[in-house]
Image (cartoon, rainbow, N blue to C red; front, side, top):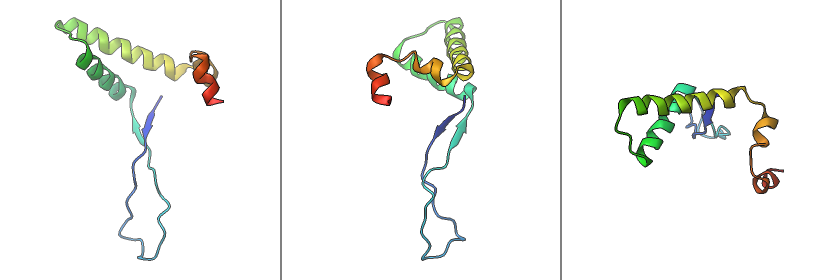
Amino acid sequence: MVAEIGRHNPPTHHQTRGERYDQYDTPIERSKLDIALELTQLHLNRYETNHPDQLSEVYAKYYALLEVLDLSSYDQLIDLLPDELKQTLE
């Protein structure tokens, strides 16, 4: 699973003054390791963890979750959503 975040792509110096810029989003690929680290940081901001073993356990759980999500199909993931949310996606 690779997460993507859109960002504005500014014009390059090769483009002329009258050219129209149609490039809006450039995906930024992030690894599962990066995402697991960010989720761990968010977790630590919300829940206090005093022991180093807890920190590694939290990180390992988030990384394992990302691995499972990466190996899951779209249909399997949709089935996990509440019915109200499924209806809004249809």
